[in-house]
Amino acid sequence: MNPDKSNKIVVPVIVLIVLGVIYMAIAGKSGTAAIVIGKEPLAELPFSKIHSIVITANKSETKDTLTLNRANEGWVVVNRKGYPADAERIEKFVREFKDMKVLRELSAASGQLARIGLIDPGAASENSATRITLQNKEGKALHTLHLGKELSAPGSDSQNNSPMGGGGGFPDRRFVMIDSDRSKITVVDQTFSNANTTPSDWLIKDFIKVEKPSSIEVKYPGEGSTNSWIITKSSDVAEWKLEGKMPEGKTLDTTSAPSSPFSSPSFNDLATDTEKSQLDKNATQINIKTFDGLSYEVKVGPIPSGSDRIIQVNVSAKSPKDRTPAKDEKPEDKKRLDEEWVAQQKSLKARLDKESSFSKHAYRVSSYTVDSILKKRGELIKDKEEGAIKPPNPGGLPIPFQTPPPIPNK
Image (cartoon, rainbow, N blue to C red):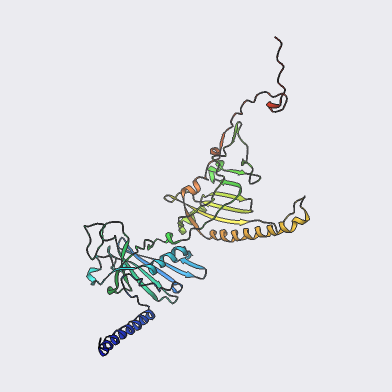
């Protein structure tokens, strides 16, 4: 090959490579997304710089907006009075944008946006997109993404394989427009199923957890007070007992008694101010004490709200300042037992700090969460079972060890 001709080919190639590197560097610095099939256009999205996520959708031709903010102690749901948000869900949500791969690219005229569901939700159209705005600490948009129609893989339904729409099978991809740029419309390998504006879906659902109850009380208000009851137990392994006079021939039905209340509850949403105010009117009271020294006072609203009940919880604790040594405690055991007691008190305080924070709000819980506890006194009582007739044992010894009776002479 002619050296001069070879140099003429190599130099332009080098220039193109250099220009490409310069372009990518500029694009990276400006924060713009490069649309390349098979690549992740938002792979460099800095999660640590995202301080607000605004999700806007169109519900029944009405704009609906959810706002999530990064506060000092973590993410919160602005639409629910700054209640803690599910940080794991948020991180997963943002990661989907970072990991999404471009399967197809296209540009569309403004008149074509409705067909692929990318009209801005502010237009109040049934063909509007779900808009995601990722903002920095100053409130400036890092990226704005419009999520359009979902698609299924090509070939999953031969009736619809047009360039502007997918198949009719199970959706596994979606139209996305990045930064409101019609030249940056892509089909990506994500559907972003978590992109909704329902505040309750974004709340962290950690809640109280009652362990080792020592007494459980249900106090009904007004005329229903005769249905109130208390069950207690003297130790963690003892049998439950029903307080008060027991009718003749009756006993506590331990199989129906709610002996494990609120052992792993959750809640569906925060109650509204109106629902919370109803708790001060004719509410039923559930009081629980535990062997750990925690006390739970739970108000239950008188009227179910759909399939939910409204409750409010107050948690407190009573613990001695010092450990009381056992009568037969050995001196060599004192240090170990003191250290264990201090560790238990520290753990108790941590639980109290966490669970007492729930008293700031009233909650909507599924009816079964409290209905299994709200039994009437008569429902906890059953007939005593008659004991089995025991065979005579005059010697007081087990049968095998008794002397058999003499055999009579024939």
